[in-house]
Amino acid sequence: MIKHFLSFEKQISDLEGKIEELRHLSSGGDINIAEEIGKLQTTVSNELKRTYSKLTPWQKVQVSRHPERPHFQDIVKHLFDDYIPLAGDRSFSDDNALTGGIAFFRNQSVIIIGIDKGKNTADRISKNFGMARPEGYRKAIRLMDLANKFSLPVLMFVDTAGAYPGKGAEERGQAQAIASCIQKSLEIKVPTISTITGEGGSGGAVALAVANNTVMLQHAIYSVISPEGCSSILWRSSDHANEAAEALKITAQDMLKFGIIDEIIPEPVGGAHRDMKVAINVMGDIIEKRLKTLQSLDQNELVKLKEDKYLKIG
Image (cartoon, rainbow, N blue to C red; front, top):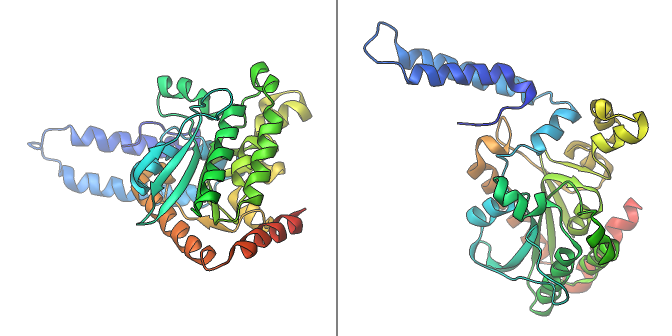
């Protein structure tokens, strides 16, 4: 059962609460508990379909930030085998927010890189709430170089509010690290696929979203600034985040329309957090399909594909 309900899911929350109450009732009463639960479950299913078929951009922002949404560590667990993480940027330190290494993806070796916000309080603090520091992006560059050397595809997964803006990060060259990461992703001559799974915030997301193919989960977002940040600048208050989300055009549907991404990955009804395994398997199928197509191209074609794609956007 979902532990965290969003503000627009009150009716769904109430219905699921009633289902749980019925399950705890004694079966010795006059009421047919199984029948009543079945009716309520049908009502919940219909309400989920109705609610999630007309989400506003601001509601999609809330879904993209859902704490039970698939994290990079969940994707690694369900989609990859024999994962060997590689740590450090060979210059300053390691970064727990941005991790990666070598793994098997459906019987082939790949390099995987991902940003993870963490699943609980201790995990989130360890991962700096998914805000990578310069050493994280330089570690990503190191992994891309490794992939290029051994002709391994690179699969990237993005879920971040943005790169860490702290004083130490700026002193160690945060902007330069992000720019170099983007440059490296454009230069390498192996297939690259980036998946935006939750939030794709600012340059911290762009660093890992530049690829031959970029795909997004149905309720993920991708934006230069958060709606709250935009609202604070334009209205001097975060109270207008709803309007900002609408104006920013940050949904997966907007990104596909503008040619920023290549495909939208459908989510289970009610969001990826309601059936994580199904969501991740669908994600894997789409990545596998696109990877096979990219692997039919030679090195020069892979580089030109990226050049043409981003010059067209620019």
